[in-house]
Image 1 (tube, rainbow, N blue to C red):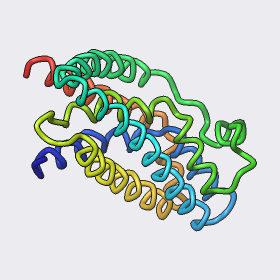
Image 2: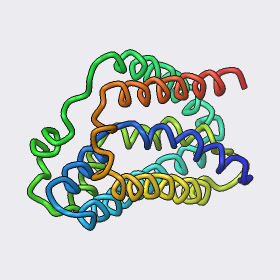
Image 3: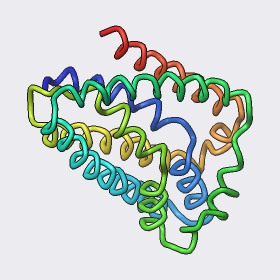
Length: 207
């Protein structure tokens, strides 16, 4: 795996990390009702959840490639179609204001856990997080090298992006909470993410 593939993957997951979602909601809730330390626990719990998805992806995709190198190509094609669809849906959803982050945090089934546990389980049980490793990540893999080590490298890069963002968010949330709550801000991030997903899907389809 080349370094430019890792950088490309990091560029692809960055807008996905920025869009307000479950982790954003948990950090907002914890910082608002507790302290910066609580937000840090959510951040580390979240990246541990990503590693769980990466481990399952490594097992599944490695088995596919061992069975047939063409299987990875099939996974990429299916993933490309899904990315285009998901990008279109995300773009359209930008018009609708997202639900209140604090309300989502209170209603989650893992709300009784601490910050780390909430971050971990909210990510492990999040189908959108799983879709990153089932559709987006395969676009950056090659059947010429062992799949598991490639996934490990990309997973570490993904965790670095998410952890950096959530730690930064934790530090500035209290001072700039009103900016992140603006519907215009959330819709702008949603449109950016939708466009990136569509472009990634098209990129795979034409190469």
